[in-house]
Image (cartoon, rainbow, N blue to C red; front, side, top):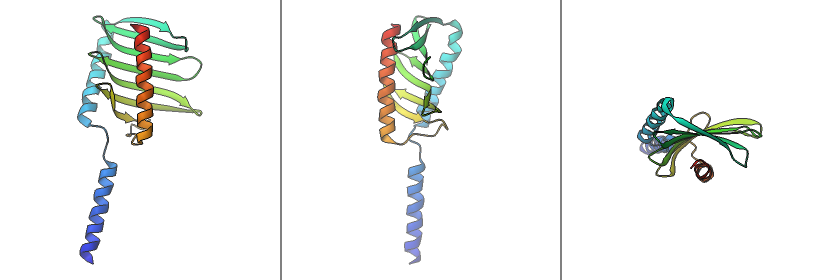
Length: 152
């Protein structure tokens, strides 16, 4: 009986550990944060282009040595701000703030090879809900594509 009880506790502890583990690869997140910091530092030498889309979104695109490195987005009629970071032609990171149902929500998304690899909420906790994850990936890849078409 005691052995069975020990196995039950060990199984419960292991299950809790698996559930609590991050879906984000720390090494990938660290590397993308390093790229983001590198881009922020390089903006002192950037040229910028401003434009407004028909949707009311204001874009500010930053180029360093002729390469797009960052797009800042805001929308006047609804509270939405986002920063998209690019390196070697790929989307790497998005920081976004949006007002949803009267609440200001922040999210941090990390991309690798045009795939969302880490999605963190306002408390910088992993979003583990697969439906929310896919919805955010689809939404922001579509938005990024629209922004890229507008600034190139």
